[in-house]
Image 1 (cartoon, rainbow, N blue to C red):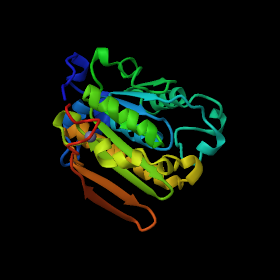
Image 2: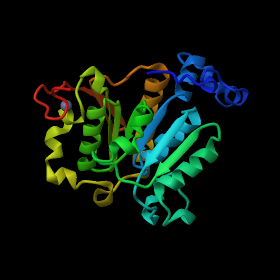
Image 3: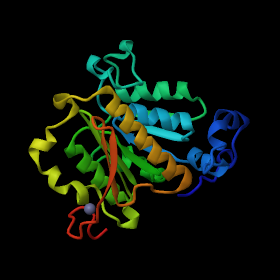
Image 4: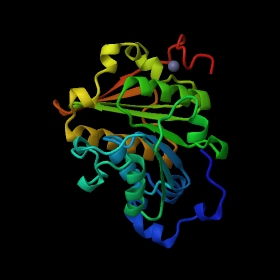
Length: 266
Ligand SMILES: [Zn+2]
């Protein structure tokens, strides 16, 4: 991870020192971690149940730049778990509404929203790769087909991918680093991607408890903060599985698939 060279990211302003005081005090988190977070740019795909809590926590913690991509509008059934939205926001675009409220929550950061659906064709433009790769992509979408596309983009442009999913009372989390060649989303879920029954299991038809997306979005933020601030991947070759019914969390190991059609050869 490279620190941006501009002078305003080389030190923290008095207002930032005040705002992030409790965090800088933390054992294992310091001024350098806070500066690394400030100079980071994260693209969040999906401003829904996961994207709302994940972006809110990252923005409150001091992430310098966040860019949300979502082509959906806010519906009444979203308000149960999409924590950045209010009843009067129904009908408005999620990405723009979320970016506006995030900048109100923390005026020290920059939030941007784009009403668009990410594809392999528009990724270079939408991720603004010409002006430097984002430090991290957060997959906050809710279906396997889109997850597969985001994974291909992560591998192609060698951008780390933090992928979370939430359904009913369960969730999963993984952090892939394509440049380290330790495996990708397809290495872990390849067989699931082509399972049509699994693909159709989304929040829209299976249901999701409000707390599931809140927990998983914040676990995602937890991993992102360590990765961006401390340059440490807490989930190298590990898949986190969260079970809200049993109140259990466990880690499952995975390996790179040497035959993986997505990351093999990269
Ligand atoms: Zn792979």
